[in-house]
Image (cartoon, rainbow, N blue to C red; front, side, top):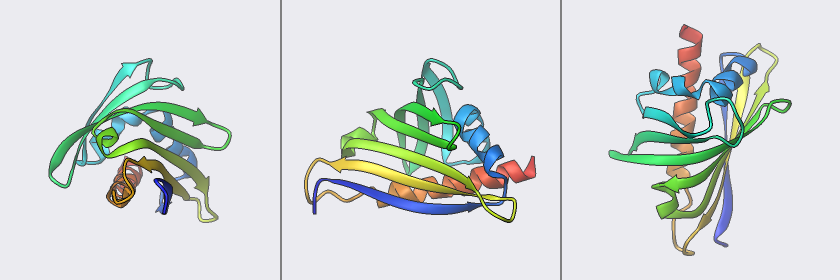
Length: 150
């Protein structure tokens, strides 16, 4: 087993792929309204809609309040968003951490979000970020339910 790895999860959406992608790509400031797991998201550099912008997420996981500072990149054509960790608590656990969200449509009018966590551990016996993968999937379900209800 190496220090670098990837974890993936697919989460089905009831809302359309386009609506979900729009929220995650340039309306991410609405996520705290949709999920009580995320307390705030603030722009640190740039803005809400521009690739390369840096945002700080404040959230609670396993009873601990943490921050995640990310640099965002978009591929609108492929509906792909990448959050690359540039600071925060996650980089105390992992040398590198990147969350990739690929949003696709399904035949029923909804969509699917494939989340890939790309990480590098500090030591061989460090745990992979399974709890973060599950946490992100929960947030996706919360945001999906919120979009359906508005």
